[in-house]
Amino acid sequence: MTAQILDGKATAAAIKSELAVRVAALKERGIVPGLGTVLVGDDPGSRWYVNGKHKDCAEVGIASIQRELPATATQEDVENVVRELNADPACTGYIVQLPLPKGLDPNPVLELMDPDKDADGLHPTSLGRLTLGIRGPLPCTPLGIVELLRRHDVQLDGAEVVVVGRGVTVGRSIGLLLTRRTENATVTLCHTGTRDLGYHLRKADVVVAAAGVPHLIKPEDIKAGAAVLDVGVSRSEGKIVGDVHPGVAEVAGWISPNPGGVGPMTRAMLLNNIVEAAERRAGV
Ligand SMILES: Nc1nc(=O)c2c([nH]1)NC[C@@H]1CN(c3ccc(C(=O)N[C@@H](CCC(=O)O)C(=O)O)cc3)C=[N+]21
Image 1 (cartoon, rainbow, N blue to C red):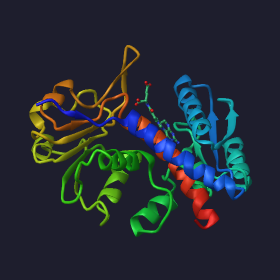
Image 2: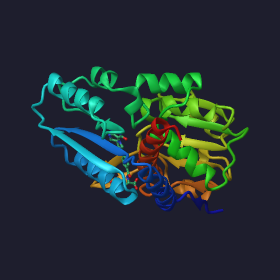
Image 3: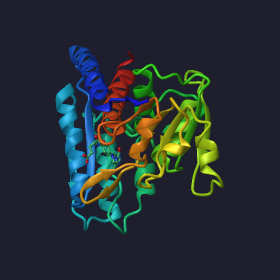
């Protein structure tokens, strides 16, 4: 068996054209959604990601608000930019690109953000709302994964999902999404303290690999026909190496390529969060 592709690039493109229609409808009511980004320092990778987000915005008609600070910026400097974006009516939502340069503490910065302007869906209030079932921005990568599976008709209702990795952006938050009544999956969260990872993986209908360990997930650990999502981003000689061994494609029923899988979906969901925030504010 060769796995079918969970094509994140094509799916993200389809979502972006749907969002463009919703943005046009907002504009007819005089509302222009705007995404802000805060980039601190000169890490080329971070700059590349941030530029990509603004390119995405241009494609769907969302306005861009770019704030840049040098690597020498103080905690106070970063927090002042956050206060400014909180107060800016043109900014529907924004992200503070992580990681921040050494010496800066991200948590007070993130807590200072207006939760209603949280484009990442990772603000303490957003995670609290998700836990409590209150409408609000949702974490982009988990949401992208759910959307990618839904649009390829991969069943989540009743599925055994095994998540590998307990990072906040994916592992810690995706279970909250997948165990809602609307998704209705059973979720097991594995991490470096898990005694027998293979034992859990072999039962999984869906595997979300978000550990950041190159080729951690081996073909012998995957149930035939399972859906495997590769979220891992490690780099070797400039190329992305995911958490999933290439041999898994021979066993799995569905696999997300990396690049071209979950990454583009994450970006599309960031735009989705901006459009939804603008719609919520407009009472749509
Ligand atoms: N506040 C904040 N929010 C974020 O969402 C955030 C962040 N900080 N810091 C860094 C990570 C990383 N991240 C990616 C998003 C899309 C791709 C993506 O689209 N990748 C492409 C190409 C990757 C390549 O070729 O380098 C792909 O997977 O096909 C990658 C990485 C968002 N992040």
